[in-house]
Each structure stands twice: as structure tokens, then as C-alpha cells.
Image (cartoon, rainbow, N blue to C red):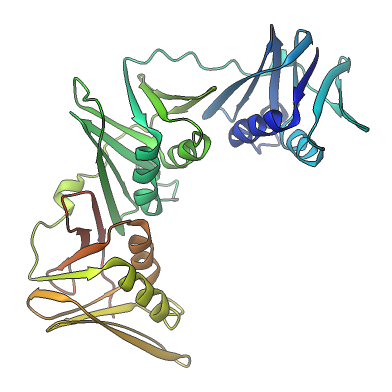
Length: 364
């Protein structure tokens, strides 16, 4: 194999495929990137056996061939090179020479015959999602995704598409986030699938330069295509919690508040909510008061003038969960609804149902 490629294009491609590299020391081949030179293109592939990524770029191919190179090391080498043409050449059966200007590296390689084949996915249903829409939706719910592998279903994000409405839902059982948006084209039949949270969080980052993302759903896999990249991940099987039943529709107390003002106040008061101390929210008349106290450290409080309806209430939350929810929204104003100190509090959009964030209370 012998080829040349612009350093910037190669680095951008490596930044995409390194997202699927495995850290398993028992399978060294999974820490490598399969590089295949064919015609006037170079195909880069990586996999950790759960996620597989393929990226194609144009290159000057003098001699076709394939090789598996150490992924992260190659990326670091290319990142360190000046902006010029990078030449890759197999110098022996297990070595690749990398040259750029006056710089020269020789890296050990592995046999492409040992690299796992890229998954062949035949999606039964496909849809096209604007990248900006997907980015906004994932950002609004990703903080509520569970990182506890003991309950795999909660490590995923539920995607529901009905007509032109795309809804995404995430929960870690302590909080629940729901966001939805309109798609330019309707789907013929309702789609419901749970996508691994880590995978779905990466898609908008990798697809930033593409206007749309194509999503295809097969029996046990999901395929995303954007630009020159193909991203395949497994579906998470199981029953996602019935989020509709979890969100109360009404509450005895309703507050309309500036999201930015509330987020700023919550961040400041949270400085004194140390060692798992809760953040208390008190609503009375036209005032919302945030307060926190940590023994032997100090206390803080801040008042916000708000529009209130219903009964006074005092409820306590995990301060990090509260700040996460407020930071995830891009609404100008939010409605806060609560029924009692022992029932969940809900933050939702004041216009439509674009964003809902439920958070379980804690004992003050």
C-alpha cells in the first residue's frame, strides 16, 4: 500500500473513527484502525464490537492495499505533523512508514485479515433528521442518561417518531428529561427505538459538518449515515419506563420564571450545598427562594421575583440535578410545577411541550 493525503483531511478522518476504538488489552486488533486504499479513495474503519465506524476520503493512491495501524498513536503522530501531504507506505509485512516533509515515522502494524468485518445492516425503516435538530434534542436530555450498566435500558435514549414529531427521552430514575421537535417530513408509521446514550451523544459531534443525518433501524442494530461517515451501533432491547405516567400533568403550585435567572441563582447557592446537602426551593407569594446550608461550612440564599399560582410550597432537590436540568434547556422562561415536598417537581417549556424535566425531591 502506498498513498498520499492532506494532513488536515487525514486528521479529521482519524478524529471520527477513533471514537470507536476499544481499550481492551486482550484484543489488540480493536485498538487499531483498518486503512484500505482502493481506487482514488481511502476507507478508515474502527470498532469496539458494539460501535463500528467507517469513513471515506479522497487520496492519491499509488498502490492499493490494506493495513491495521495503532489508532490513537497514529492520530497523535498526524496531529503533530505540519500542514502538508502525509505519505503512508507499507515497508514490510508488519510496518508502515509515515512521512511528512522532513518528518518520518515507522509504526508497527497488524494484519487486516484479523480485523472484524464491518456490520452489514439492512434497515427496514429509514428517516432523515436535520443535524441541528438532533444536536438540540440530544443536548437537552443527555445529562439525564444513566451511566449505571446494571440497568442497561436506562443507559439509552428513547427515540419516538410519530408523524412529524421526534421525541427523545432519558432517565436515570432520579430525573427524567423529554425534548421534542418537528421534522420536515413525516414518517409513515410510528417508530420507537432505544439508542445507546453514549453513541447518540457522539453523532451530532461527528456530523457537525453535515446538514442531515440519515438513521436506519434494523432488528438489532441502528445505522447512522452523515457526510462520508457510516456509524453502526446496537439497539438496546427491553421496555423503557412509561415516561407519560411519570410526569404529573397538574400541580398545586405553578411558577413561571426566567430560566437564565434561576440557573444563575442555583449555581451560586449550590456553592454552599456541599457534602450532599440539598438545595431548597421555597415558593411564597411572588417570590421563589433558593437556599442551601452545609454544617461547619456556611449557608446561602437568593430570592427571585416570579409569577406564581396556587399554594405556597417548600421542596428540596439534589443541587447538581437541578442545575443540570436548567442548563440543558434553551427556553427563555420555564414553568415549575409541584404538588408536595414528597412528589416530583417538573420544569417545562411555557410554549408547547418542547422540553420537560422531572426531578425527584430529597429530604431537606
